[in-house]
Length: 260
Length: 374
Image 1 (cartoon, rainbow over the protein chains, first blue to last red):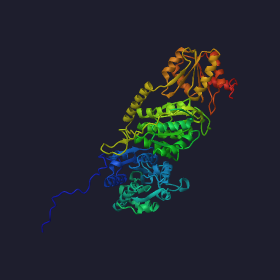
Image 2: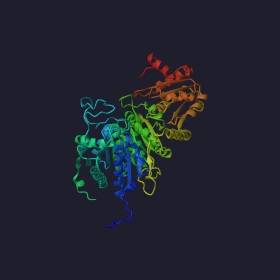
Image 3: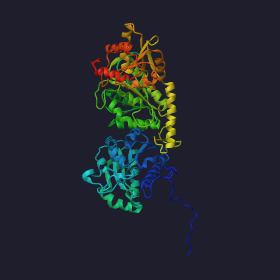
Image 4: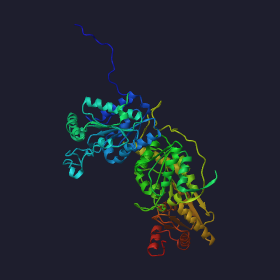
């Protein structure tokens, strides 16, 4: 029996237009690259590349601006929501998003993120929670799990001494200015697809002026966790998700009605 | 326009509006809060941006963001608030985006008090934030000058893509006197070719203060230093009073300079040939003019509302060629003209040494009771 031979070449996977061709500097197995790509795909699909201004943080994703082919600024540590506020307030019709890690958003930038949410600042925040400081070499983060070993909690995080992990999606969901606050994970393809959908919704929330939006993404740091990339993905599933449950923490009624 | 009876803070706020400021971000702090309050009604009324930030830290970073879009943007604060802004100012300097900051200086260090002071001189003129950069700093001595220098600050900030500051003390901010406002300028929106406004029909713009490769950071430092040297050549501003035939000179800026003028006039009435040199751009500092002055007078008295911060710059310019004495009122106190007249007479009589430290001589006279702080 003859097998039909396809002669046409179909494009099934391309580099998003919103990406530059710069190779990322991330470690093997790090999910920053996945998160970056999801944002780029969403911006391409919405056709808003020319209207978007990104705000990069301080941390491992400090060079995010090198990887995106649209306007980008680079904030001081933790100040991305304030910088984004300054941009959005003078360019209210443009799309403004921050991309922040857990040290940036939940530690040094706590005041800025809380007040951006409190004001209902019409920006979108992509929050990478990998429970550790990556760039400085694996110190304890505000999201480090109890008992987790880091270079500044070498015997494991002792909650008696250093307190408990901060659950930012839950905290920010309490703010009246928040329109859309969810937590997703990047540990497998299904969850990556769900994460992309959430990023799309966050940008749609911004398009429709429905308030502050944040997508928290549980992410890996194989290098500083001292794990293989595969083990790191399992660690997210087995340890991160129980501590940081996935879910929709705030979906304003106007957001639930969004059609796109 | 006709002269009006205006408070310094409100005058600087409205002058900013008329200079075409499109966005204001700030945080309340005495003695400059009237600027923020004025902007909170005036800016929305004109369809411009006003936002009260959660802190000076956030305010300066909002300024940073708006500045990156090429918007005419400003903030205002007072000493402790400006300390908090230093991180953001360093980033702004490292990104070469323009902004204006008004500092209505109060007594310090620490929480200090809300009285007029010039204790922020070093913080504004000689850095404050990390790394190598320079700010343009303009020091008004009257409400009219506060208006004019505020307008000028916007033009200089954009011309050189730099931070331009108005260093007013609480006295200039709070006092009322007749002054004339400029005409309202048209708004210039998004004319900056480097700005991040959305990459429509052009290459993407990236604005950042990072040069992770020190080779490039070094070149950046050299480039902005070259730019600063151009500013030091073109943007020095000062005023001279009675200096043509002067044998002695008083040097003071802002309110200290203005009070010194009264003392200089009183000294002239007593036949002392003394004049006043009042730097207006304290950064760039008029080193060359003070250098020339030092060659032709017999002695210099530096007067400040601090413990001698500008004194170091005067000494740098004078190169040890002329006796220098110092008189300061730190911590929120003002010099009074009678005391300054006494200091001028002291300079004429005893100002004869090129050695030692003028600050130390002043301190010893306080400690031994020959200067009464009243």
